[in-house]
Image (cartoon, rainbow, N blue to C red; front, side, top):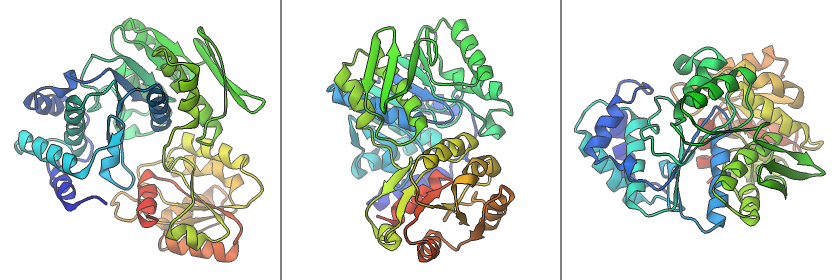
Length: 424
């Protein structure tokens, strides 16, 4: 379990800036300069941006690189159960003592100046990576790309842009081309960029940025292809064809994420065995994760209990695709979302696959959408919906009425984190 020391420092860091999100890089560069510019002392960096699939794609790349014998740093956000999940040093989650020391060092170096929580914790991750030997560094963008706190060096080995869709409009713009332009801000001069499946208007923006910066582009449907044939994943690029098992992460969308990960693995010269490991050994919690042990699983009894943290319209469509191929068990949802999300866009594709929805508020989150609003939105898209006090009560009601069903807890990574903590 997380010790109290790092938690207390993280709590102090929350008070260093009045806004949760404030996209600019000036504060980040100031703090990094004070820390000795650790971002310039990292192993080769693979930088990932996009609306959906960043975490899964990163997990697959890491699995492939590690199967080939490489030590890999990885940075991701947000965390689910513990902050430590955000920082993986040479393959291992950072331990409590190391995290506490890093956070304290960064807090002291900041000297009370204004800085956001994400900026100062990202600086801590970069500082940690600069001090531990490894072969590669995987950096996942927090929000956007162009002015994200991870976008602080031009010394990249590879950029990756996963599918871009409408999300975070209040920060990134109201249209897909605007949002794609922000994501394309991670493209660096002369640095290759792998691009996952995109809407045509988004791809045009990404291509224009890459052309302006002389960055070789490796785009889905052009330089690489991926699909499913006879229950196998088939990937092809100029180096040839890979015939692999389907990804261990469920869902048709994971085939596309696997394609981007395989393009990265091939870029770094990994052999077929490492490429297979990328798609079969990746671990990424709360992405259609089957919960198999813990108090909530015991409460579920004969019901299957699943967890997913997707939270926008594109994630709703992807999740609907998974449910459509998930067998004959009736599906009941327990859903909680943030008030910044397009709840109707998320729920609409799920309506035909779910027998009911129990709406909950996300515990401990000031930005939670009230359960009453979630239930109302569900009814508006044709779902049978009721409110529940919490996940436990919702689950108890569902399994009492439908003991052999499939129960999917969904709508937010923050809800997923609360569930994982409750079920530990």
